[in-house]
Amino acid sequence: MPFKPADNPKCPKCGKSVYAAEERVAGGLKWHKMCFKCGLCSKLLDSTNCTEHEGELFCKMCHARKFGPKGYGFGGGAGCLSMDTGDHLKDAVEGARTNGACMEPRVIAKAPPGKGCPRCGGFVYAAEQMLARGKAWHKECFKCGQCAKGLDSTNCCEGSDEDIYCKVCYGKKFGPKGYGYGKGAGVLQSDCYANGEQAPKTALIDCSSIQAPPGKGCPRCGGLVFAAEQVLAKGREWHRKCFKCRDCTKTLDSIIACDGPNDEVYCKTCYGKKWGPHGYGFACGSGFLQTDGLTDEQIANSKPSYNPDTTSIPAPKGQGCPRCGGMVFAAEQQLAKGTMWHKICFNCAECHRPLDSMLACDGPDKEIHCRACYAKLFGPKGFGYGHTPTLVSCESEPRVTYMEQMPFTGAKAAKGQGCPRCGYPVYAAEQMNSKNGTWHKRCFSCADCHRSLDSTNLNDGPNGEIYCRGCYGRNYGPKGVGFGMGAGTLTMA
Image (cartoon, rainbow, N blue to C red; front, side, top):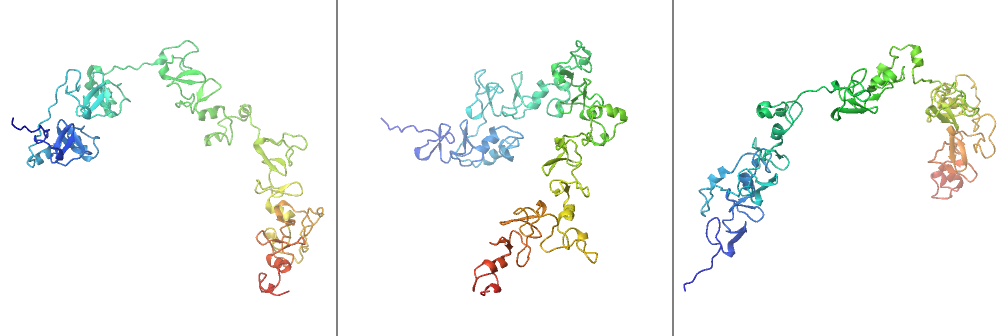
């Protein structure tokens, strides 16, 4: 019996046997290593960029160019945004192909009726199927049935005629017609020429002419209100076209509508003019800053009434404003010295300057003062204190006699409660704190050199006095060479 070699699989491109040492597998077929290239651009392929289509190999770019959807918006780059099918590449590489691979025109095998692509009737394979209407379509057949625009799952609309359309053509063919519908200017008119008798015949019906039973219709026109046009206000149904301001006929919504006491609706501006308080300072703009043509008697009788003078309302003894004795309400109260003051009464007792919590100073006379008047009345006197008129002495002898370390006059404070140096009371506007007590600003100086002190150079002595750092080191610090702050402390003095 003659020798018969084993049958080897044939390469789909060149038709020759493929041996194990050089085989490449794709699409269930075996190919030669040198035949495993793109059938359009002859680019060598591997398992990561190989796409098989009916016995032919393509790179991903050429497969998308030849069999993918065409037109604006498809593909991954500018090369896919055109209608290019790769014909120029086919002509360029035709003469360079030496392996005998054929590139015959694609022939789509016809499928049984009802099982193939709804547009061309051919078999649809998994690598190229697109699903719509419960059926599988070829990618190249998956386009609008009217304008032939390529579709995908985001812009595909299924028509009632068992075809698919883009959104614009679907709106033209099956959507509502007339001004305001659709996505572009082409559908903003009835398009009766394109749709023929399919264009709906719309007629404007005035619902206000359909009268409702008394008390159940629109409060303005009395017509029957249907659900598609109803607007709710004051527990009643209004037509959308009737839901306007009673005075200025401005169209209203739930944000700016105001229910008036006369069972009507108004915009906020007209409501403020008609029913709000009148006079200077009320409402939203200059149009409300006058009485709007009303007489004094009409303004006095209008509601709500407004009485800005609360100082005339007497309060129980010891509970009213300390200055006027009137009742203090929460909207106008100001706190000082543990009592409540009217906002109009909360001013300096001397210069009547309006005060706030930052400017008010509580004086020993149970009044409040601004800082300048407080310093003039209760602060230290003499050159360097107070405001400009007190910085110099215009007379031969000053009116106020200044005594060293005693800037105050009057009764001294109880023992242990006043300034440790002068013994007079210390008020909040002038107090300085140390370990030994609360001092006047004037008294807060070194006991030896009288240098003014602050929290950065203060030293409390064991004798109850305060010192600067130099004097404290001289009096109570270690003695001898190397100690102290200056040359004067390097001796045993």
